Image (cartoon, rainbow, N blue to C red):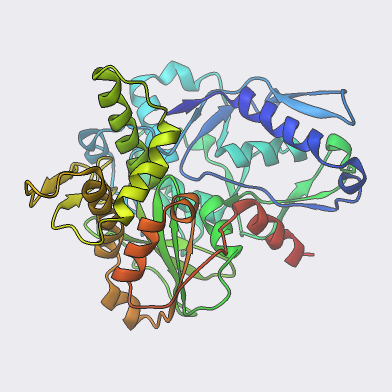
Length: 415
């Protein structure tokens, strides 16, 4: 749940160094997106070191903490309930930036003394590229941190101050699609002075890369899973969240919002199931590679069109029901094969999403088509069959969501 920022930046540098120099030298705009909710801390004047090497200057992380990701679980339900209620339409959850900062301020205050800036990992990259003295964060990322009011576009500063929150760590906030600054060095051959967009949420950019009609719903099943639609023009989320609701409203672009059922359970559940099968085989004295298990269980499930077996697959809980874990019911002696179990598991993943965002609600909002995407969906025909069985809309595949493409499209349109 914590990641080494030096390794992340090293990987970023390796990717850029592999791109054609001739194209890099023609770049005028840089769009950046990354995983929301998480937080990284740094010293504003010592956050990185620029060095010459390869085709052009590059920066390395310096006085920077680990990235505490959105999957971090240190904020227990008891701890979260002890925090003040946010003035926001988004419920607070573990892994959210402000929740993590609260945890450090109460449990490890000395840790925070070493830093004077914080943001998501993508905000850190923008700050380093543009040499920002104060981090700049988009409304998209700010909403994902909690304690941010999207209507006023401001942090809940008064509420946070009263609870001893270190408000000096909060970034300034700007609109998605705006320019944060310009590159201060010729980064990997990209000219000095190239415009850098304010960092965007990976989810919004993924949707932006494929959503063309307001009547489309985007169903993405990768590590986790999301079902989202664009809300009507002029929609504003409620002033206070409904903690029991599975649908969250994410700020999008140009003042629009996305209605999102964001499940913590997707391809990671299938990966856990495959890992369990591999472990059982090993305990029985057989060595089976997990990569060999995937195609076999999918093939076995394709042979079982129906299964009375019922699997509720929420092994990672859900943000609106963190303590609701997985269960299996209607277990019959004739339906214990790998094919039956895999079929039921795939069906359960799709049913879980449809329970979070019911078909009737989608119909009421005018959905006429589903765009299916994500690696888990692309590689698993059983999942695709269950999507088509459960959702009474035409399903189109192949328009894969891509946050990097979406971020680049945003910057292109901002010229």
